[in-house]
Length: 371
Image (cartoon, rainbow, N blue to C red; front, side, top):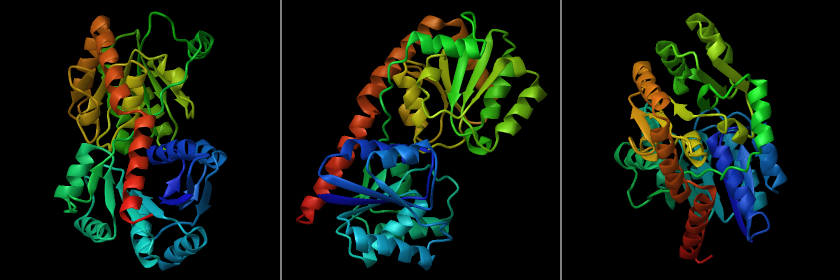
């Protein structure tokens, strides 16, 4: 049995947690045994990870890289679990995996950068470089992240490996489910739905830019379907009222199963200021939707401009409006882009492909250590 200890920060509803769920499902009943340690757990994804046989251990808030009380907790987990591999993701997880993997002589140490760290300090980059010395490999979740690790954090190129994130192939959604949602949200066959999915944190995701684009267009059939919950929900509802477009914006709240909501959309839009990968863009593509995205982070690798959708500069509601207007008036071109996006996603961004690449890395590094 190959024992793998994953370490990260909060285990709630983000992309990092979803990929650990992918591994938990794939490794269930296999020769891999997983454990997961983090600062906090909660929500449907954490529950599903545990339902797939992976114990999640909370260690509490992590107050800085040298919070030795937390390091001792991780060391206790290592002593009890005796992992062959320690795999740390997110800065907190990278820190705990690097330091304690070294102290406890875990055979294989893997670190993973899961964000697009545009605003990370020089001190943090320096620490990341120091931590990388303990690692056998440093995973980047997208090509732009690999560039950051090599060129900004100055991590040895020999240690950096790109494993693109992957998303689950959508389940089949029945016509009854779709019609029930249309009835619930008063969506008619004449409506053109711009959809977006994500945690409602506007500083990064810039949902307000999409709201402003909807206002600028002034098209009565145009509606925005906003799927997600979070701390800025009231801010966004206030902005909607301020713009006078309440009748054109649908707030659904958080839903773990988003597949039926994608089926309501004509196009998918993500307007982030920064994005490590952009999982929801790949999800939209797997639903045969053209994707309108900002040209930042991993999005500029996922979306092929003019082929699977459009890329526009961040913080430009007018350019979002221009591309939405194009899709609105060119449904055939939108459908063609959606089909191209599906083909690209099915080849490059599936959960199955992600799991196979991670498993191959684990086995390669274990073999090098004679395990």
